[in-house]
Amino acid sequence: MQGWSLRRLIQNFACLVLLSSIAFAQSHDRAKLEKDIETLRDQLRQKEAEFLSAAPEDRAQFADFLHQTGTGLARLLPREKYREKLSVREGGAYFSFTKLSNSYDRDPQLGLEQEQLSTGFAGANFGFLASLGDTPLENVNMGDPSVQYLAAFVTPTAEPEAREQQRRSSAGIVIGANRYKNRLPVAIGGSYILRSVNYDSSDVLVAFRIVRQDTDGSLILLWKKLREFPTRS
Image 1 (tube, rainbow, N blue to C red):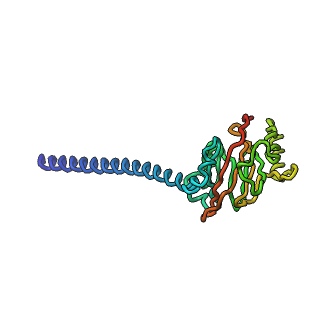
Image 2 (spheres, helix red, strand yellow):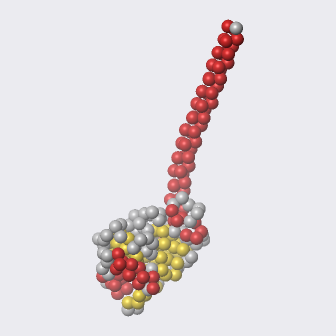
Image 3 (cartoon, rainbow, N blue to C red):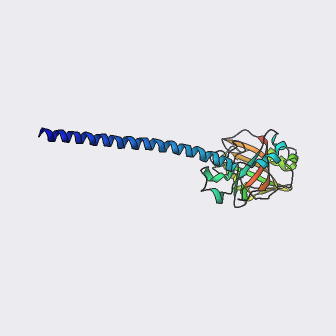
């Protein structure tokens, strides 16, 4: 009887050791998996940042212009193609000239979808785009008649007035030789002026030029910031 009890005790102890070993192995495997996931996320962020960047030859081509303050190069990906493929929200189809980000979560001011540029995306936010044709960015400044209307525009502080500006930007308004609208077709080699009003985050006036379209439909933009205005809430 005593021998049987001893055998049971040994068996129970062996089972406990085995279960403990399994639990330790599982814990060790999960810790390794968690570390692997973080490593893969870091690699994905790095790859996506590279994917969203302009090519080195673009930077080389416009190196002199990019030495100026408030200038940059950006890539816009077509939303209909990449929205579900990248971890960055909306697939890199948006760009913020204030946050220098392609994420829709970070103050987006310009977007690309179905060969259309757009601005004004959430809440009472709104904006105006105007095509400047084949005008070099070097020639676009605050004295340009096409820029003056957007530069002088006073951002409304009340929501009903902001909603009215949304309606105006959607329908489009004509001032002089320019039509200002929240959506315009893509013109490769064309320049544009943008006034984007994102309440509580940014109010910015930017000139940009679509210098080329890549093989995947993405656009390379050369841009310069003309003015930032105080934000209104």
